[in-house]
Amino acid sequence: LVLPWGSSDSELPHSTTTYHLSSYLRCNEATLRPIGAQLTMKPRSLEEECGVARRVSCAPGNDPFSVPRAIDSRRQAQFELLFAAFLPFFLFILIITAFTYGQLLWWPLPWLIALLSVDLLLTGNWPTKPQDELGARDWIPLFLALSVAGAAVFIGLWSGQVLQPWIAVEKFPERADVEPTDKGAAYLDAGILHFAEGSQVDVDSSVGFEVWPIVYCAAPIFDAQGSTSDSTDVTVTPTKVAFWAIGHNCCDSRGGFHCGDSTDLSVRSAIHAMHQQGDQRFELAIKKAAADNELVVGDHPIMVFWEKDPAGVAEKALMYSAIIVGSASLVALILSAIMMTVLKR
Image: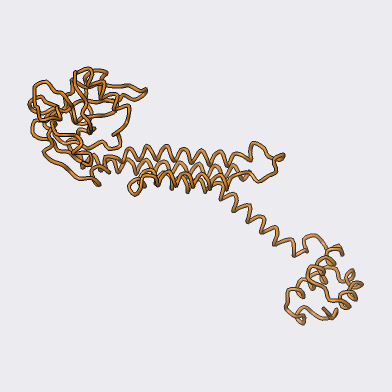
């Protein structure tokens, strides 16, 4: 490249090479003049010209080649900071929402999302420094990210359980004229059960099975003749009990059952406790109540929440689950902001 030393900047071609070389000429023209002949005799690449210019002791701050690198490094550091601080927050919302509402689509979906989220958190927050340079602070982002994921799973399971009455009411059929003597297997898919006239909860035959700090309560449901049999043989002394009212922390160890609206003798409706079906703690309470009262548990016992207004209970369940998700997400956002502040230091 041949440059006329007496030319002004406006006369120079507007190319990248000309711009950078002209900058260095203005930086120290007297020092660069002896090497001008070298530049005119043999064409050089931009990298070579930069090397020649760097060796001529320009004033600090006049090196235009170092500025973009500094800007890129700063932007990359800011991106990594935001990634480490707020990625757990977005994954927290994803996980807790999946466990609360994703079960409506496909029950393994929440666990699949949780596993993928944990994998992403491990990949994004694993320390990149050499092993001998790692300190306790370098593991903080990974520890906090995994803690957030674990908390999201725990809170999501809780919120999903709170939502169960709404799912039973809104997504499953309603059954009327249910007799306590009916076979329990006929109502496995029922959401709301309206029992026949005269059906009641035997609150005095209830039992509380305590697994601290929760007491799991169960009481048999009988008809007007005092029968709870799921067979057609209706006698004063019940044999097999197909339907059980249940609840948490609403009974004594023996009797005193007051879960839901069980003490209101006019109530005959109930919500199928689908999420509690198969819960060993409630099953133990049912078996204990049956043994204490000389009853026999039916082949397919149906657990229910005895409620006067199942639709109202369902709406409250939906509201409470939304409050849990919203409050937990707000706390996670605040913690993410605090985490970003700590990492900046």
